[in-house]
Amino acid sequence: MVKTMLNINYLVNDHQDTLQLPEKLEFGKIFTDHLFEMNYDEENGWSNPTIKSFDTLSMSPATMVFHYGQAVFEGLKAYKTPSGRIAIFRPDRHFQRLNNSARRLCIPELDADFAIEALKELIKVDREWVPEKKGNALYIRPFIYGSDPVLGVKPSKSYKFLIILSPVGAYYPEGFKPVKILAQDDYVRAVRKGLGDCKTPANYAASLLATQEAQKKGFTQVLWMDGIEQKYIEEVGTMNIFVRFKNEIATPMLTGSILPGVTRATVLELLRKKGETVNERLISMEEIISEYEKGNLLSIFGTGTAAVISSVGLLKYKDKEMIFNNGESGQFELDLFNEITSIQYGFKPDENGWLQYID
Ligand SMILES: *Cc1c(COP(=O)(O)O)cnc(C)c1O
Image (cartoon, rainbow, N blue to C red; front, top):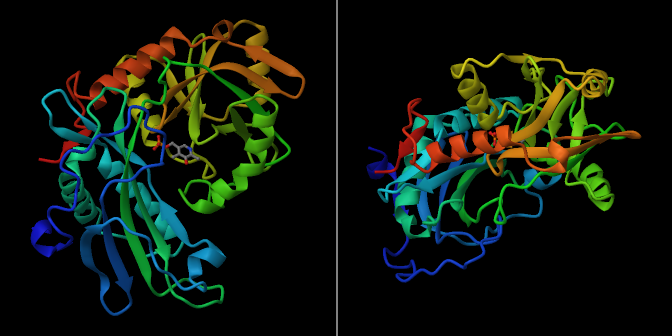
């Protein structure tokens, strides 16, 4: 059905027949031959879905998104499984979240099922670009932006929805590595009732300076505290965060300023299935420090599509440094990483129906 509605606007043979991906695939630097595009206007709604050659966009300097940031995006991955079939991890969740983000930014929602089918058609066209090696993957970036070529703060009347694809290398090319994080109370990423639970460019713009300063001090990522009192932990970089106490695994509850990660949901489902005690609740820095000092804090880890699981070796807050697993990666984190990636790459049965195959 989708196929008959799609405009196929490229030469069948414009992909390289003997595509050789570089040995080292840096994140987000190279893109496949094609993209998917669909436009919105008031008269036609979302219309004219097209797969075409990857090319530059030509835009008026007055295009709304440049000035007022009306845009939303997603990030998900497709994997080549041992049978050679290509699987996308939880696309339904990602497109549902894209629509949630869109609603908050006055962007018209998409038909999520149609968008997923279009994505599958796009990946079929560029299937040669899906890397073979375990650890490598095809990163998928869907995004929507306000495209009216006019100034003035109001919702755009026209929009563009695009999907671009980028083959990416393993997040841990030299093995599972721990991160050093700096809890940040000089800056906040987001506040409750703001945009924190949306994947929208504004949140990333807000995070750059704090991240840059933390990296200058030798940290990998910033641990964001809540935007009101800077008392509760919220997220780490562009990952959700989990804290393993002796008797409980906790993750910050979704208060509105936290991005509801698909990996976060995946980890919660897996841990609950194993019978672990898992809670979504407020976690204060004070609690982290006092439990650490009592020896009740076993480890901390981040979750997100890019890294899947990221083990925290060091956490610094003001003058307090907390070291976990002797600064190395934790076994618990490594096991969780292996479990999730084995499902994603089709090495373990997909008991929860998280994978959608492209054909
Ligand atoms: C994307 C993102 C996450 C992780 O979400 P996943 O769906 O697991 O990739 C967490 N925090 C922020 C701020 C993000 O942008």
